[in-house]
Length: 276
Image (cartoon, rainbow, N blue to C red; front, side, top):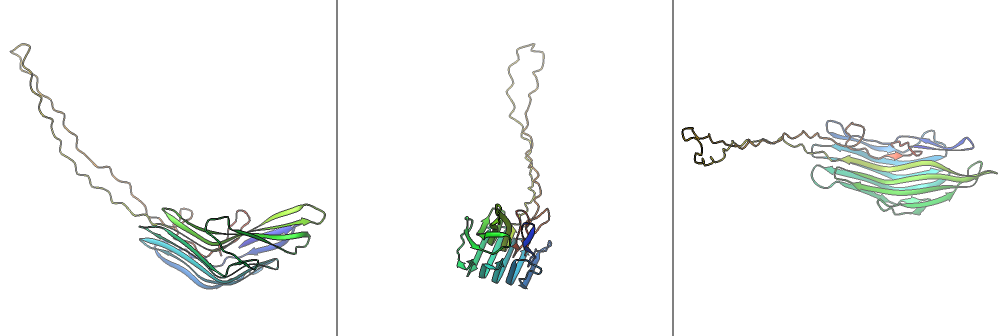
């Protein structure tokens, strides 16, 4: 988590934490972690509690997968309850053959104390609540929640809850401020389909076949000269092209193969993303 906001040069929101990640081993297998308490040591203006029940990522010869589960989540900012949920999950499965899948679930999800229902890949739900911030009048915390479930021919991404947070208000005797605080991602899973290697085809050449001999025209010149020899245009052998090798690859990241990262609790100011 990396939330941050300042008013008149004074920090009012600061939070930096990483809670629960899993990356499948490069050689195959499963990486997982369970029963992680959600805490944010040293945070200013932010509180969080709950449990990362499990984060898991698996890499196999014929499939990769990842999943994340968070329970009893409570996220508060500036003394206001922002997000509460009983259970939040994200899961992806990327078989070598067949459809890639991405699924999310949430039970008891609330934004500012009101139940919300998120539909995948839509603008989501936006709400706001008044907060008290020194130096600001009419301060308000504005939050948009979205849900992502996407698949392609080569992989899948599931983000159960993504919260984008802004703080607005008017400086006493000054302008209206609109401060991007950051974003928080609750339960994320990614994977990529392993590509199937293709064997090099074996070419069987066809033997040349001579063309039929053309009939010899009757001599028109000197009858004492022999007729010209017949010519043949042989068919060239047929050969197969050598197929390029196909590399196996999994997951996402920089050159490195990663079978999936899960259970991210991410906050960022425009650019930064921190896993949790």
